[in-house]
Length: 247
Image (tube, rainbow, N blue to C red; front, side, top):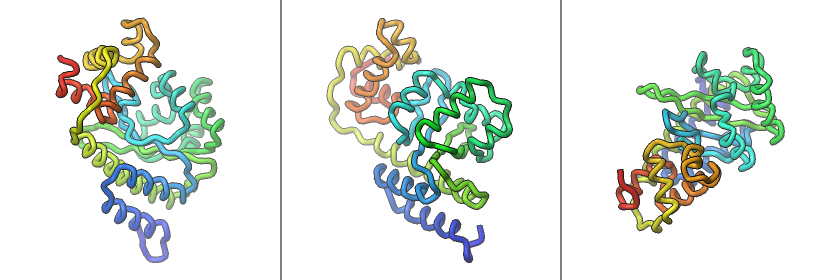
């Protein structure tokens, strides 16, 4: 980046410098949102793509999209069909929803997934892939009604996305390392976490227990809160450590 006379470069450097001074998860989230709002984005989802036996919600580090949209995305398992995610198979450079529309021959269902964002006044979004040395892929995905997606803005947002991802991950790991007293789980919550530990998905657990997958997810969220965790995989670890469940 050329700093002289370049507002994007100056803002990005100022953002990173302040981000490095923050340790609170909430402070980090507020700082990130304030910065991307300057670029015209109103919502952000930052997550790690799920591995075998895991779901999208397991890897979420930050998400402030409306609950109705998020619930629909989870329940319909859109991550398997979302063309903005499938684009990763051939492109690990940052790209926009418009880029996907213009370069892929989309099916009707794929167009529907992209068009659902319009219901929430998101005209376009940016996908910033972040690849680790182990090959794990995380995504920093802001969207908004009229975002600035110029080449210089995209370059600045890629830097912002990478630093934000690492800051969020550090803050969450630090929070998960604390072990305050927890509220005991209910029998149903223990039963469900036991199946989560066995690698079962919400829908599979629902079939086993004769309840809906949505009900299963609700119990898991309650258990996570009681165990002071943000990820279900760590909730399982904590439940084992506290003697709530066994392997």
